[in-house]
Amino acid sequence: MKKAFWKFGMVLFVLTVSLIFACSKPPTEEMAKAEKAVADAKAKEADLYVPDIFAKAQDEMKKANDFVAAKKYKEAKTAALEVVKLAQESVTLIEQNKQKMKEELEKMLPDVQKALDETKSAATAAIKKKAVSSKEELQSTIGKLELDMTSVKEQLQAGKIRQASDLARTLSEEIKAQRQNLADLMAQQKPAKK
Image 1: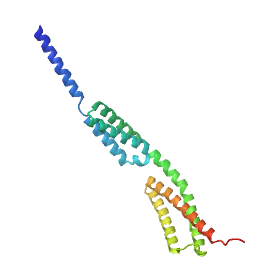
Image 2 (image 1 turned 90 degrees about the vertical axis):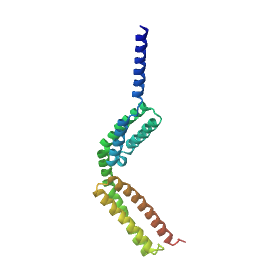
Image 3 (image 1 turned 135 degrees about the vertical axis):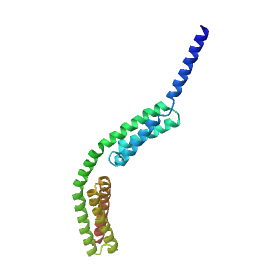
Image 4 (image 1 turned 30 degrees about the vertical axis):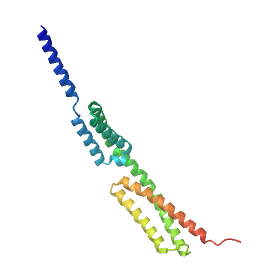
């Protein structure tokens, strides 16, 4: 009886040890799926159109890798599953956010074009009044602004909405700065009243 009990105890011990080691292997399949989900989301430009959720997926991927390195496989598996969920969520929102950004850009472009036209007129007036020290430099600056405007329109047409939006915002700021500079130069040209 003692031998049977001892054999049963050994079998139970071996099974327990086997179970522990079986549960403590890296979640290789889950990690691979998580990496693929992040790569797929990036390929679909989730990083451009859903940056907040995509960043969470990347952070969770880093956590999963850290857990694997620390041999905390259960936590790594949980984190990897969360990565997949977040990456898929970001992919589902890409088109919606892209469309919203496109609509905002299309509303913004007429104002940017108007500001550019006004800046060109102000530049012409400043050149006529000899308020600028370098006519060529001013013309070069205006030319660059016009090229940027053309680039915004081309990128919008090509479906590169985020790039077009970012360039349009930068262009708008550059136009404002140039208009202020021209206004300052023109104000310096006015003779002082006695």
